[in-house]
Length: 166
Image 1 (cartoon, rainbow, N blue to C red):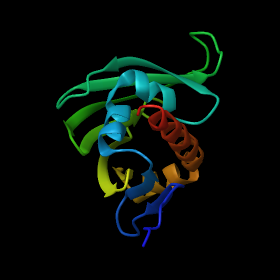
Image 2 (image 1 turned 30 degrees about the vertical axis):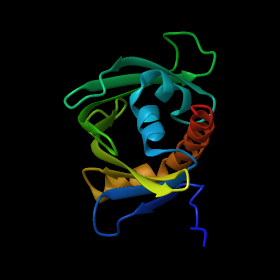
Image 3 (image 1 turned 90 degrees about the horizontal axis):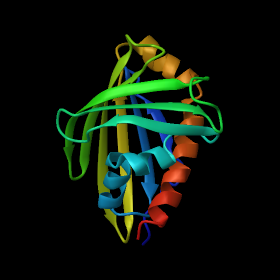
Image 4 (image 1 turned 180 degrees about the horizontal axis):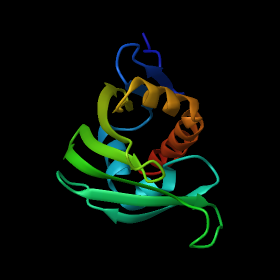
């Protein structure tokens, strides 16, 4: 019997907590997904929606390390329109990443993100991501922001990337 695969991200809000859960399956090993989330060169190739380029400016993927990147429209010159994101890695180990996430356009809104990589066997891994934000209103604003476009397009690029990692 073949397990049902989640090849398009599911995004769910907890009805009682300011929590968003995202789940998606990848044809990849947990180690490949972990590498794609912790190697700055690989991360920059897949994160976010189509039409944006990612420039990693700081990346120290270890317990206590920090990260920062900017996204700008593809082909746009430096110093033009860009969106900054930053955070700290709290836990980085096989199968688990815990980090903070801040969009610099809203510097007071910090989320705590947990990523787990579940080995489903047969060359598949389920990514479980959750973001805990500061309020139900903040959670609902994230959900109304169009975040699913960036999630779906980014994860499609991630699948293509891990297909090439071997």
